[in-house]
Length: 617
Image 1 (tube, helix red, strand yellow):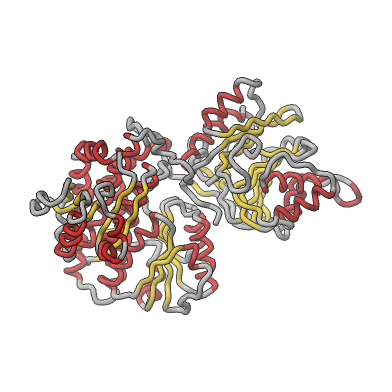
Image 2 (cartoon, rainbow, N blue to C red; image 1 turned 120 degrees about the vertical axis):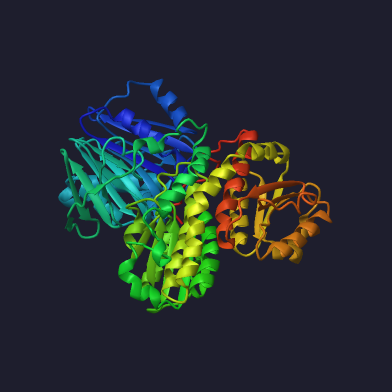
């Protein structure tokens, strides 16, 4: 949600900025803009629509030069998507230019004060208010003298409430860029006499591997080729801790696939291997998690677990709920990250919280972790992005290790999350009553998952044919039981995200408690019905749908011919343990959503209105 990019150095800023915006397109946005500083003058280019439209618009106006600049992709919060509301925003006097990811909650009261001082506003955004506040403080410093831009930013931020990651330039100080963060992510890349700033590392990795992650309440000042950190509140200087990026530039490319989503679906055999690599200890029937071991005593004594996440992450948590209870005997509750923050929760030394987020920057989930820590819960994060905010704030962490996920609709991170839940359930189970032999049995099946997914992908063309058949429908049910109830919800989410088809995912047992009233010939259902403990129940659900004229796609186990004459269409997955079937079921549902979206001509990698990482609540 929103992306920021900045460059200050010895080279031309434009190529770095425009490429950086392209790298951040996956975050979701509705407009884009760039501000360049050269010769004491700002050139600002911004446009509703895609980055490609911004590039075309800017190149038709002026020579795009200058070695300092900031850029932005906007996901509308305050004000409709428009050229005027797009970032960057200039202050009234033209001295300050700013880009901002986040929300300034008290902007209206500040705006009222500024209007009283004669300031005028060209947009409906909270960000333009902040630009003018900084300008007002800067030019009306102590004793009527102007103060440096970094101090003006710091004082302005002391007056605002909300979440933000900002980049600020002043034409009076062309060698200075100010970065500040509370709630929204910001990372600074350190090059050879140059600096690269972005919302995440994807625009930076092709320029440098050395980065500094800003923590909440910190600001960075890049001045005359030097970088310094200090706190926003009290100006205390902070030491620089430089991280080394491990992401490879080729991981950010499509690799010959027409879309990132399809590439990432086909990445899954390897991403699952990477998730389990070095973690399976077969002779002990156990799993090794280096980021968890120092808390083994606390994990062994857990009496209650809460899993939090949003969207896909929460659905993965529903799979984890069954796994923890079955293998480790720990009572589990799965909660929306957004709601956990605002309710009474289990607390104390024997309660724990697991936070799931692909990006590691999900605002709702981050807020929930803060609440959990206040309640003295042990916190564990399952995230994909190394060095992300959640990874840094939790007590213990597990990385997915699936590489960058660029398409907005999550695929390889989803299967990895579900796998990690089963592996973590084994880990906790072996601390309790799970036997070595049972652990070994599950781990042997886990090791076969990449091969099973490869076999599913070999039949992608069959699902492509189904997409042509079902693309015309405006409604869909996705149904499953037990472990596959969460998988059904995820399948529905994928279809609605990519295809803009109304899809509902629910536990199939709920069908006759209301939802079945929707079934008719124009409301098809996909039923996840592997030959497991819920198979006979799922057969009944399928018959209930067919009796009411509904069309049914059945997703079942290879070799099961029983449903072929009942269902309209059948998708097969390899036979595996019940708790692992969601991981396999995800793959054909991802393919179905992808191919229907392509058939409908949708922007598969960047669905409308969506953001990859939701960094404001």
